[in-house]
Image (tube, rainbow, N blue to C red):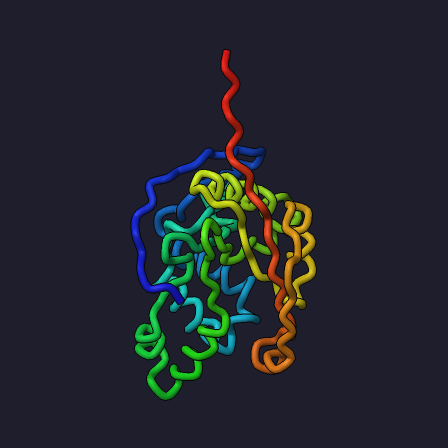
Length: 220
């Protein structure tokens, strides 16, 4: 888990669609708990061993979220989806090893710290790493995931990144299909059968989307 947070004043472009859907950077005010609930709904299966049970995990995520590393989708003012990313030393989900031990106790926390270390991914040079996409189950299939990915790509280009990297687990083919439609290409699959019983998945595929430079404005 990452250790620091810093302000990010970049707003990016707003995308308005029928149904008062808005996609923008950062979390709306007072949306931390809602964001944590969406994140847990999407990734609780993966994070349950490290941060469960659900109530404790959701509370931990909400307390240590870095709101400036989120791209949020709201409909009629309600958070219905978010994408997290890691750049500049921290990502959407935070909390240090000390925070984990404080929340779960030393006896119950040590193995959680070890599991979280297995899941951590750091960006390489000129790279933005995604922390995943979470969409309200009632809103899936409405294009929110695609809009979030589009804004991630815009952000990555603005930051001068040459590629976006993410990991997708073998039990989430729907997410992989979404990423493939948006230009992500599988580059490596790490088979981890020893994690299937512990975390619920047995393989992790790294996917890359290359980001070209921003187009040069045409001169009149």
